[in-house]
Length: 118
Image 1 (cartoon, one colour):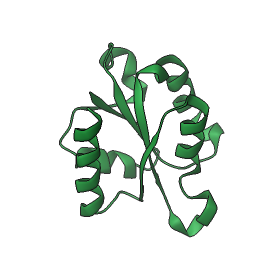
Image 2 (tube, helix red, strand yellow):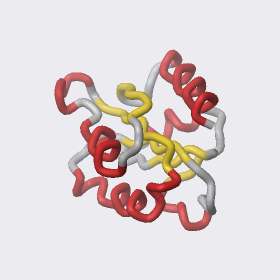
Image 3 (tube, helix red, strand yellow):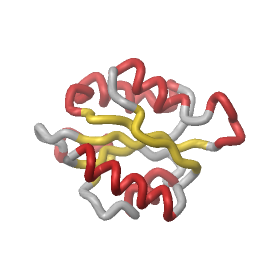
Image 4 (cartoon, helix red, strand yellow):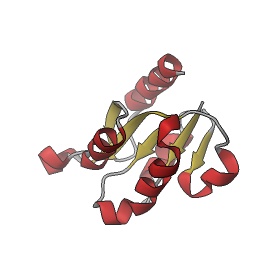
């Protein structure tokens, strides 16, 4: 299993690199995904800014084991709404949420999630 991610400000990318797990940017999915299952990690933005995420999930969503969202808790109900939308639209579980590029505790938790999902 791999980690698929999309990052606009590179906060999600910084988080993914801390996981010490095989990963790829969804923009390179055709070259790297093959038939592997993955967990998707994405930031929170308007769907128009994440159109590539929706296109990726339209092509590969059946291989997705869950989604993890990054956001800013100051936005209250809109915290990780992109991950919630992906979860709902593609019928995959929301596995976790973290702020910005995550804390050490977030990294440990996501590593455990990866172990349990794989």
